[in-house]
Length: 69
Picture (cartoon, rainbow, N blue to C red):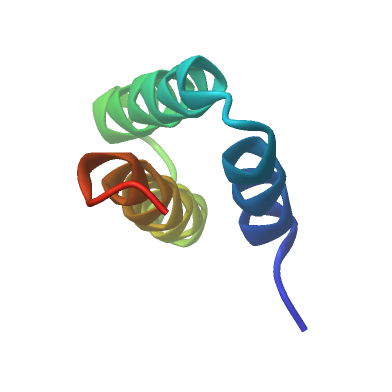
């Protein structure tokens, strides 16, 4: 079963909304930066989740860099 972020990325690719993917990527990067800067708690689990989502979004953006369908 596909994860929520995979479904979202797939939908944005289908409608051709590259800007929305870039927005998602920027948002995930801000969240990761914020989690890395925090102390007093082990944020590895949420940080791993955000990094996995970032990889999915980057893979979706890579489809725009390839040859047109």
